[in-house]
Image 1 (cartoon, rainbow, N blue to C red):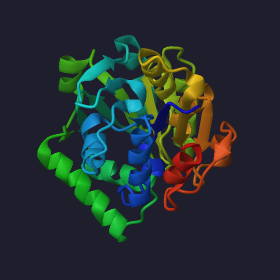
Image 2: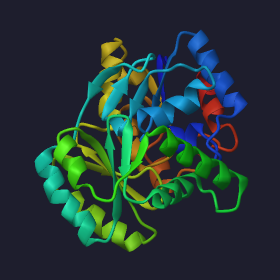
Image 3: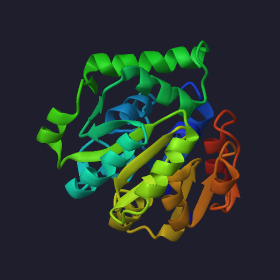
Image 4: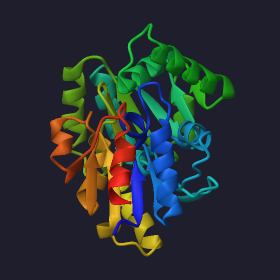
Length: 284
């Protein structure tokens, strides 16, 4: 019996234009009305996730930054896991040597040296091309968060490291060159203290090894007295695999690649075809 549902955001709950389709919203509300807990599990930081989800009055708890943060329905932090300083000192030169631009996720803020690259990264994840309505909306979202101060452009990370070296939750590296990403990822995976994944094409997400969606979800379920056999997860990308391996019912989106689908017992429709709603309706 399903008692807890964990849902990824980009490529899963969200359409390409970063909106939640009506049927998906209604299915989540119906699950909650039937006593099933629903938690959002995303690579996004809290402000990015919170604004979109709460606009629909869904009010779930959140697993953010791939598991580096777990927050309750009010946004209060339940747990936080940061990258180790020694790992940062070894991994950042690898990214730099590969010619990869990267961003730092600290508390509710994203630090970047290139705001346009951040916009390009979101466009890649969403599968939106420049000039389309979806691309215009995504650009507007990023610029708005920059105006609000949640995305901070800095000329250098030196001062950021001096102030926050022990508070970095995630590093995200992006590139249009797949070979650069592949080589950097292979080197980073040699570090036992790191979890290296991806939320979409063109990026690498780096967290502490204990800051994974699956680890955070298992701990959250345990705190609620829920067995992982009674958990359903819905996702589409590599940073969802740790959840898919642990859950009693793992559902891949129709837009997921075959490698992701291989980890799952079920495949639903795409994020443009109410795939989340169909997966939830199947267990109600």
